[in-house]
Length: 392
Ligand SMILES: Cc1cc2nc3c(=O)[nH]c(=O)nc-3n(C[C@H](O)[C@H](O)[C@H](O)COP(=O)(O)OP(=O)(O)OC[C@H]3O[C@@H](n4cnc5c(N)ncnc54)[C@H](O)[C@@H]3O)c2cc1C
Image 1 (cartoon, protein in one colour):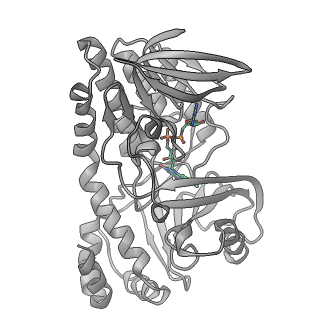
Image 2 (cartoon, rainbow, N blue to C red):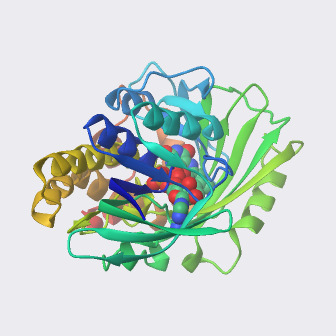
């Protein structure tokens, strides 16, 4: 049996950074993933904020930060659009990543910090011992166990680790977005440094997007809440690509599908000898579906708290609960606000969205924040605001 201080299951961005910070904190760390190539296939539109990377102390590298974003275009169902450029403060302005390179790079960071990395290693089950977990793995036809003082579950949206350990990690159907995306070339964008978002019946419960990776290359996708429609997300995307002027002549080079838990962070993130991070813990922005930065931030907290617990020789919940607190302090208020805005947006009809976009077209924005948007909304659409009032 292999023994380690900390075992991280899942080498996505949240798990890789948890492993890195646990190793930097002096613990023996093993990071495992069932994939033979970390980061592939991607399930992501690959957008991250500059501020988020800065907070994590990650310097953007040309090999994975493939396009710099300067603005946002919001498109209503009737095609009315609102452009927000870099003259205003954009919290989400950042980069489009090449996740297949980025995820591997993050895992390399963990390796360089001292973590051992095992690819093509599937966790099949786990057993709680007195003060550890015994984790059963399979790798290239071989079965073996790893004994860990602390287990970090970073196994993504279909997570098993938390549930196997008795934590309530399940996502309700109404909180799970079904995402589907084509990476395309020959996309005719007006500006290939601008993220495009399309709202309304084009994607019930979610939105469609065009995230540019290059001059004519983009991730073109959408996410829907499947309980709000009988039509599969894939059919919505095929229809969107056909009618959208930017994509009607574009060519598909990749298909990505995946679930995105947008119901907010799970209540209990830890127990004796275990922590849950990233998508597995619902650490995803409920409004945008973005989970790279929030998952990595909490991953960093998890690695630091786990390493400290190893140093103190105490792996009980009493010690590990510091992780819950740091995640709550960092994310709770933002999540609550974004959940409300998401509910509000999905309560609006196409007609209401069109009239809001129409009114916003002539508005001068100095800064894009929820407060600022609400202030403008009060001025332009008291009816739409009434719905908002019910949510807050
Ligand atoms: C269509 C779509 C578009 C998105 N676009 C964006 C975006 O533009 N920006 C953004 O910030 N976020 C986006 N997201 C969300 C983002 O992809 C996730 O939030 C992010 O990948 C979460 O990282 P993670 O490390 O928690 O999980 P993951 O990246 O899912 O990594 C989990 C890892 O665990 C491994 N694993 C799972 N089970 C086991 C097991 N039993 N044994 C061993 N290994 C296991 C998996 O192989 C995987 O590598 C999008 C999601 C979707 C579906």
